[in-house]
Length: 265
Image (cartoon, rainbow, N blue to C red; front, side, top):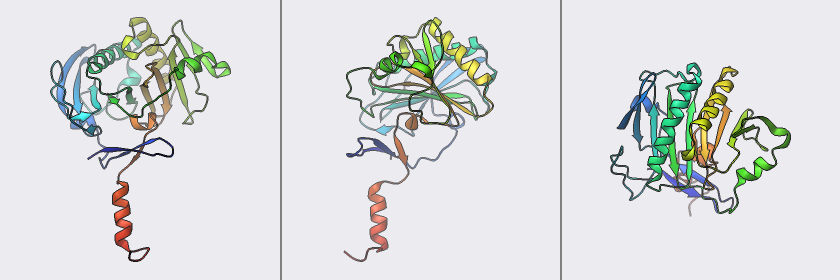
């Protein structure tokens, strides 16, 4: 069973999960919807592996049920184990982003948490992984992203009428870009113009990349979303700054006690 633990010293969260890494699109889950797309249909599946169990249930609409505090679903646009994201046109990427906006707005009705992360890598099976999580919580009253945009300075790369592309002040990865709307807005409020701009930036970035990349929509509790593009494969927990281990601290402590490394107590 997965659970989150809070470190009282750093106030950071650790997810304890022994779930093995698998292809969620190949495993599938509870199918919720099939949505038209130029290349066929995208399928939406509910996933329960990486969310914290609790009393909540989802019912109605595209949903069946989800006994989880937090929520996860995947939007799959490739029936076979392949990833066409680098081959898609700007218009096709915009369509997929529009589908994500619809899904996020539907999920938002249920109030599962203030953190949204949607990830997709450019390798493996082609799907978007949507996470809504209640942790970590952010008690700050001002919007961090709005503050960053006012001081982006020489870290700015490019801008459109609606978006700014920049390198973070303290990047976590060797290659990391942030794409943020100039005004304070939620991902669910994106219109066709902003989605087209986002799609164009994704297309330009991936066309210039030779390795694996992770594309992510990240929205914290302050509700100012940004698009993050990094090198390599990253998951939602890593992007939210949540540590991930496979064994609980109680189990580790018991194992060391039983080994008698420090003698009998």
